[in-house]
Amino acid sequence: MHFLCKKCKKAFRKDMSNYEESDEYCPHCDNHYVIEAKTPQPVLGVEGDDPRINSRMLKDDRVKRDPSRSLFAVDTTDRIG
Ligand SMILES: [Zn+2]
Image (tube, rainbow, N blue to C red):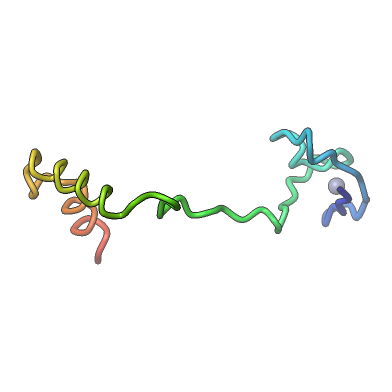
């Protein structure tokens, strides 16, 4: 894959099959360049799982916990506002 450093304007190649954290830096000027194609994928939603089985498991889990102490209650009150 071909990259162009925005800082020193030098082109260089990177092997994406052997990409390491240090490869995020320009080999010429050590500028940390950003790869725009690199977008984080949301890890919500599980494909292929039966939602009925999931909700049953969630319900089972909730019954054992105090709802006021659940992660959801803490999360919303903390982050809204
Ligand atoms: Zn550079």
